[in-house]
Image 1 (spheres, rainbow, N blue to C red):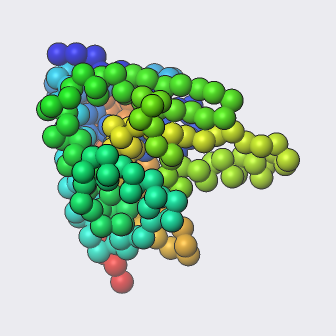
Image 2 (cartoon, helix red, strand yellow; image 1 turned 135 degrees about the vertical axis):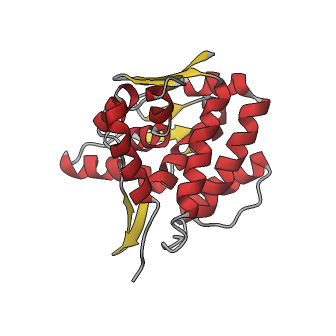
Length: 231
């Protein structure tokens, strides 16, 4: 049993919501007396075997499989460039859709948790702030964030006029896998040129982790995210 410390971005950021939604399956094991999940202001702490994180990635893959009738979505040009670098580093063969990115990175993460557990502990417990960038994981291995995570930067800039919003997020490959797992859990559709992500409320996950009575609610949320009818 180890403490897996997972750094979190500030409240209200999409990356924080995606990470916590990805971790939501561990709320089940916590209430049932297994691996525990505690969420704080600046980190989430998972107490259990390091390979318990495999459940996070397996759940994301299963939920995404249930959404195969939803649009696959071709990535933004910049995201294809970023993923090209990740594919080269991890020796991945994957089509250029966000869905395929999620599935490939989740499969890689499940295997990597077995072979490099210490690197996961180090990466997830590391966050660096500068005036221009927030870096999750190992700075020397960090990749540029995907376009959906940059929406907040542009909104910030618009809201505050001429200020240059310095909110670029970079992540190493293990953080990319975790955030994309959250994308797999939360992806709900594509309409009017926008990706629809239905994140699980943080307070609900916190309650489900300590109160068995809240588990049905979380289960209903995750099941509804994985079952769609396309007309």
